[in-house]
Image (cartoon, rainbow, N blue to C red; front, side, top):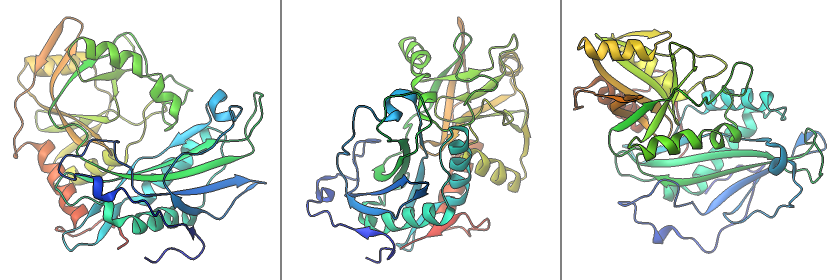
Length: 355
């Protein structure tokens, strides 16, 4: 294995790879043999190291545990048709992480550190990349404040951990979603556009209530009278209405999804009209009543595309037409998968081939 010479490497002598059934993966259950660590202190990022995956010692006083300076990214690596491995859109994920770090008053990374760290870790654990269609190696960069000081302040020390693990498709079946009209995910001026830990913890309650009522996820709204749609759970969201693909516009309350951007680019390449504009709950219900709401689906790194089969609002639930291989949602997923696997040309330069 050719690990970057600037990255120290300690071999895991107790590999668990042989214990994994790659035909029965569970999202987030299995972790690869190694992780990468990089410390920030004295005003600079230190040289990273790849070590066996395992517990991280920490003091109860580290600032992330008390004041929430904790951010992360989610990326994927794929086994290509020729046996090589590609990492999808590293630069786009890096740019989003940089914006998140800035919003949370955390130190920026260099692209070289980010890219080389991920490439080295994936190459070391390349045996963990699944071959089964729909499966992938999930890559989770996590950065948190680890200065040991019991006081409200911006931390001066941080730890970046990059870990990986094989995963199946996030949503194995079409979703039932509830339009949220009581609880909000984000507010103007808040951290909705940042991928920080607190955004997810704060969203659990509404999602829990939705599940108790037979739904899988929520469609977050701006809580205005019109209930303009923002995003869905862990994904951005799209609606196919009368042949046009509509998605809410980016704002400071919506996380800019890398898959969202990829879907928009590819849909336009297919000749589909894409509109990035406000879309309200009222418009969605009216489109269904008129028979022109053809599809709805989520798009995100974990899910890729996730068809939505039902949408609920208050006491009303509408059912969407069934999905098949001719659905726009599925065609986009198939094209994106083919590009990642190298069976279609990577005309946008999105794949970083590492092994």
